[in-house]
Image 1 (cartoon, rainbow over the protein chains, first blue to last red):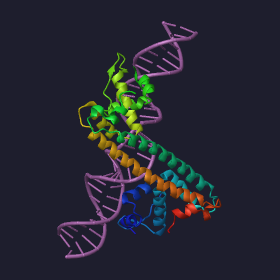
Image 2 (cartoon, rainbow over the protein chains, first blue to last red):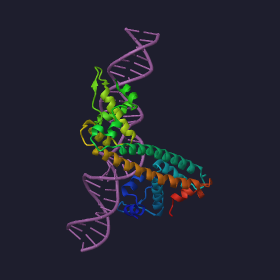
Image 3 (tube, rainbow over the protein chains, first blue to last red):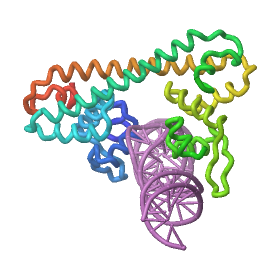
Length: 130
Length: 130
DNA sequence: ATCCAACCCTGTAGTTTCTACAAGGACGGC
DNA sequence: GCCGTCCTTGTAGAAACTACAGGGTTGGAT
């Protein structure tokens, strides 16, 4: 299959597929006589793997490691577990941060008096000094 | 005050202060005879404003607009409200996304059998095809 | 007077993960 | 032969900084 077909099969844009190839995440495929990339099932599976991992928020560096582990099926599962656990902790930290922002923003918006900026609680909270 | 003092007063790094100046968020200050930046109270207040807005997750473009609004105190408060409301919605969307990732990751990690990659549920879930 | 650490200057390049061209070649149908 | 769609490479941009490199300045100790 050509890059466009692979793109729609995996819902990964063609540009992104080329980008992954350049980053070494996806091996360079065979080429047709017209120099078009020609992909097979293994490529589609590998790209789907990458996409699922990205959907779970893993960074490309993590995806790279996970691919190595997936390729060597005799490895102990601990490394996978460690990567995923670390990632989970990062996600939870980010959720906590965003939750604080959300609470503070809701507090500010709730106190908006719909007047002029002069007595806007939001602007007032941001500056000048408290 | 010089840039280092401003930096520690606002907990914004000196490099970032220069960056904000280049972006037009902070007006260029006076210079000493040695060409050092020399800041006053107004600069510190403006930078604190920026920092608080950034802590709430506003993008620099939003901060730029908020600064304009804060400078013209007769403006109606609606524009501020609109920026903050939009931002709140983005934050809530991001929290929802991350929440889904967290749930899925926890599910995967809970099913980890601590064996080899061969029967690792995490790797299995990511690929090849389901 | 000299020395040194700690500060400051400018400008550029790197981070992350793509996305968007620009300029050109290939292919399939009419 | 032409048109629209696909493919190729390479480069630049987006966000918000961060990290140098290669210099000048300051202020205190010796």
